[in-house]
Length: 131
Image (cartoon, rainbow, N blue to C red; front, side, top):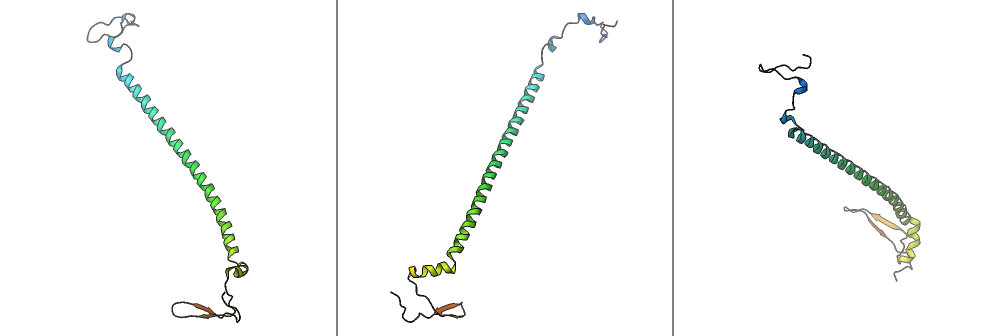
């Protein structure tokens, strides 16, 4: 009695060791096969998308670091150029360049203020003329 199956629908069941396999349950069912295949494909697709996103993030991070280095270089160049501009705009530099530019120095500038803005006029020293 220990190895006997229960009878179904009133028919006596054969002993367990004599029960043959159901031909419909032989092997893996198609539903199980396609379900597993679908699970594998979905997992592979999710893995592919994850790797693609990771590579994209890493690439954009590298691009940002390149832009940060370029911005730092431009800041240094801007500081150098500002120093150079200040040097060229210095009064001493301008006075050194006056003889080379054929300009006439003004001895006593006179400032007037009309309605539209300030006008600077001056006197040309006596004996100095334009060539």
